[in-house]
Image (cartoon, rainbow, N blue to C red; front, side, top):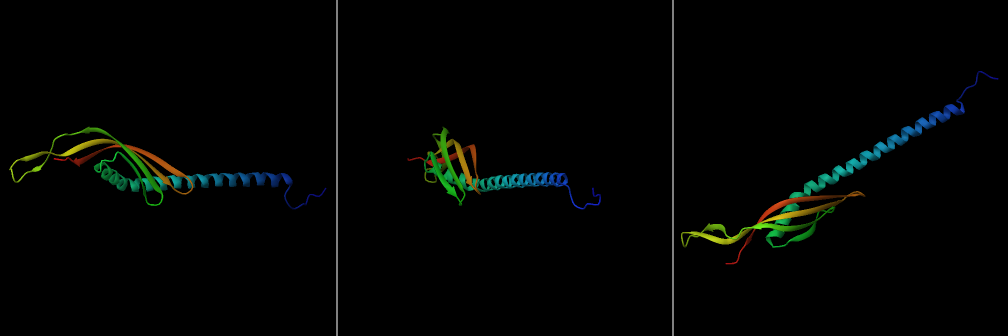
Length: 144
């Protein structure tokens, strides 16, 4: 037998391969997890950024006496909403009447509505859907 051999034995190569492939698999899993987390954060930021404009559109829809609607914000955000009237006031003081010197009643109606909003962000490959419930106070001009 030769005791002066150079190189690696088969066992040493197999052990080194198992260690190397395990490190590659763990690295790949960690990278993919970070990519998924980044996509979720990006979708959450896009949704949060779009909410003020979407809520303004909903308020406009309520003032036009709509009880549901849907739309788009940018290229990736879609939304749908529905409302349910909770309470409405009948006679609301609206303004001072210069001609009579008194107050005018009943020219506007305040309505408190429950709004359910669903926002979807169709981002990179996987979409995110978020639901929001809130109350909105709107007013409608009442016919005289």
